[in-house]
Every structure is written in structure tokens, then in C-alpha cells.
Length: 337
Image (cartoon, rainbow, N blue to C red; front, side, top):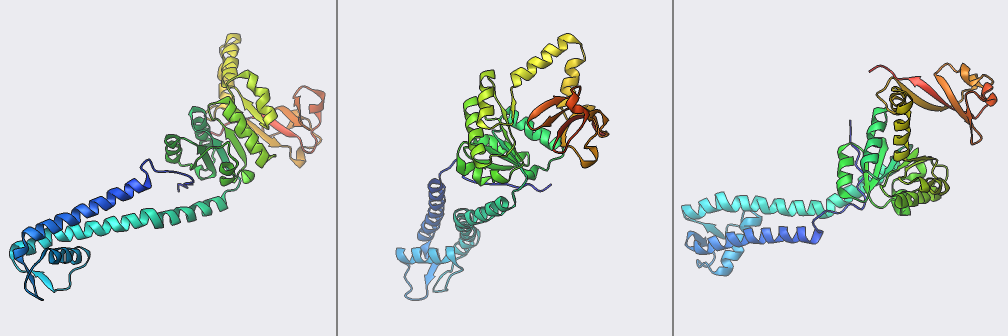
């Protein structure tokens, strides 16, 4: 599977000037080494112009030899000088050229290449899932999305932490190191063209601010957010979240369900996971189902429907006749394997 990388605002841990300085110092050190050896072994060189080898001649000869194959005006004449040029100066020449080429690539061509790749990736982002925050919840969401069949290339992870970004990249997702509370960051991942947004920043205040920012840029975008405090659940909904998940509350449901019967908690976990026998599925009503009761759908067991923003349970009278625009929540069997 091809890995798609989105590298925006990503900084190396080593400042660019320091990396450049180390390369320059290394090249200067190698050049100085060659000059020193040539000066101490200047008797092995011959100047075809005036016959004398000065220190300037050594600098000139070393510069020409390191950067090219030489002009022939100054040449090594002893075996020792020739062996030094063969086995020491030639590798130094190659290594210095590699330093220069690597520096040019890192500081010029690589930046141009990454900008071009970034623009191409951004241009093709459409119908993708954005995960803001790649902690435990964000990583679990990515894994669950992959289990449900979504291509990793259609998942974009946004996180300010470089370590989290590396983990998301290794998982195959497109990545963006940045602050998801900022408009520019969400605009960079084409939030207005995303299929959904998952917010799991690890802090309720940050998560709610991300929801507010996303809602301002894409008001109709489905947004799922994880909050830790029950008091913040209404705030998250007011900010524009369509789904608010409280891990503590869900764990409490499982624990409370386990006291009623030994299999209730197992069934709830089975519904939520992708590797169980059954799963919850949400879809819109089909034209062929309009007018039929929710209990008559053939694709699964209808448990509730949503009509005009209102939740209707399967046993309510309004569930006896499906209408156009209804959203059905059903329990379906998981495919084998």
C-alpha cells in the first residue's frame, strides 16, 4: 500500500543553520587535511611553470585536485605523492562533492520537492477523515478506521507533537504537524472537503476549541469529539460537535451493564468493535424502504431512526412508516474473517 505523506510546517530538531555549519566545517576540515599533507610532502610535487612549490601553490593544487582532476601545471611526481592523491585526495573529492550535493538537495531541491508534493496531496484531498490529536484515542480511532476498510491514504492526522506525527506516519496516514485550533492548519488539510473530523486532543478545552474552529470553516462537517468531563459534553455540542464521546461514561455503561447480566457488557463491546459477531451500521433509508416499518428492513435489525433531528426508537409508532430522509441505525452481522 502506498504511503502518502503530508509534510507541512514540520521542522527538523536540528536548526538549518547548524546543519549547514557542520557540513561547511567538515568540508573545510577535509580540505585543510589535504593542504597540510601536500605542504609537508611538497617535495613530491613539481611545478611545470617555475619549478618552485610555494604555500600558495599547495593551496592552488589542493583546490584544483579536490574539485577537479587537475590542470597538469602542478603534478605529483613521487610514488608517495601519487598514492596520497589516489587513496586520500580522491575519496576526499568524492566526499566533498557529496556534501555539496546533499546540502543543495536539503536546502533547495528538497524544499521545492516537498512543496510540490504538498500541493499535489492537498489538491487531491477529498472525502477524507481528519484526526486531530494522535494520543491513545486518536491512534485507536485510526486503527479502527483501518479495520473498517478505510484506506490509510484517506486519513489525515493533525498533531503538534513530532513524536505523535511520526507514529501516525508509520501507521500509513497522511500527517500534518500543527495546531488544529488554528484556521490555517485545518484549511491546509482541506477540512471543508473532509468526510468527517475526529477530535481527540487529550484536553477538553483544546478539543472544544478545535470543534469551534472546524465548525466555522465547515458548518456541515460531521464532528466526533472525545471529552473527559461530563460537564463539557453540552459545551462540545454547542460548539458544533455532532457526536460527543465520554470514555468514562462509556466505561461506566459497560461496568453497570455487567452487573445486570454476564453477557450485557460483552454485547455492548461487540457492537462497538470491528472484530465481533455484530456491528452497528448507520445509513439513509432507500427509496424501496419508504413507507415500510423499521422492523421490515432486510439489511439488518433496525434499532432506531433519526428524522428531522429527532431520535425515534424501534417501538415508537413513528417507526412504523419510514419516510424519505430518515437515517437508520441497524445491527448487522459482521462478515466472516
